[in-house]
Image (cartoon, rainbow, N blue to C red; front, side):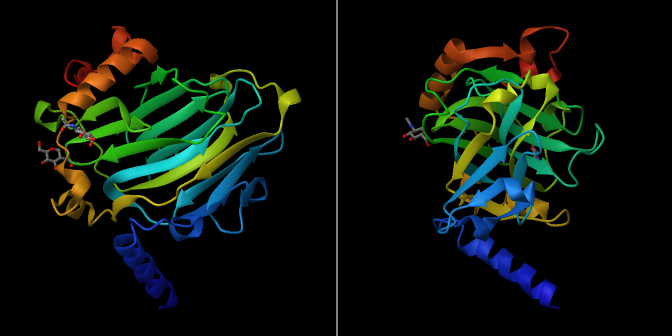
Length: 272
Ligand SMILES: *[C@@H]1O[C@H](CO)[C@@H](O)[C@H](O)[C@H]1NC(C)=O
Ligand SMILES: *[C@@H]1O[C@H](CO)[C@@H](O)[C@H](O)[C@H]1NC(C)=O
C-alpha cells in the first residue's frame, strides 16, 4: 500500500510539476556506481566520475510515452578517447536482445568533442550519426534535448535541431512505442577508443533535471499520443528549423549511416 501511494504520488508530481525547476531527486534516482555519483546540497547539479574502478549513472524514476526531454551537460575536460558521456531514453528492461529494444541516444565519444546520436528501433540499432559541435562541450553547460511524439523524434543541441527520425509506420517501418526511462551515464567503451587513464578521473556534470513528458506504463502508452500535450503538436520542423538543421548537418556531421549502401536502412530515403 505504501509503495502504491508513493507511486501515485510520484506520478502526480510528474504530471503537475513537469515545468517546475526540478531538483534531481524529484525526477531521477542514482542507478549504479553510487560512490562515483555526487549530488550538490540543493540537488541542482550532479557529477558523475569515471576512474579505473567504475563509472556511474542515474535514471528517471518514471517511464514515459512521449515528451520533450532535456538536460544540461558538461563533459569531462581531461582529454581522452574511450569514455562515453551520455544522455538517452531507453525502453525497459535495459540491454535487451536486438529486436526487443528502443533507445534514443546522445553519446559523447571520448572527451574531444564528437557527439554521436543513435536510434534503436526494435532492432540492433546501428543508426549512428556523429557530429562535431560549434563549441567545446567540456567548457560550459549546453542543452541536449530529445523530442519524442507520435509524429517524429528530434535531437536538438541548444535548440538547434540536428537530426530527425520520423514515424514512418505508414511505409511499413517500426517506430518507438514502448515506455522509456531517461538515463545518463559515464562509462568506458572499447568501441569509443583507447582511454588515457593517466588523465583520470573524468568528471561529467549535469544540471536542469525538469522536463515535460507523459508518464506511462506499457498499458497506458497510447494515452501519451493525446493532443493535450503541447509537444505532440509538432508534426514537423518549421521552415527555419529545417534550414538550421540542413546547414548544421552540412558543416558538422562527420559520420552518417545513411551515406553508405552497406549501413543504410529503409528510413534513410524517407527522413528528409
Ligand atoms: C505512428 O503514426 C501512426 C499514423 O501514421 C499512428 O497511428 C501511430 O500511433 C504512431 N505511432 C506512435 C508510436 O506514436
Ligand atoms: C520555428 O520554430 C521555432 C522553435 O519552436 C520558433 O522559435 C520559431 O519562431 C518558429 N519559426 C517560424 C517561422 O514559425
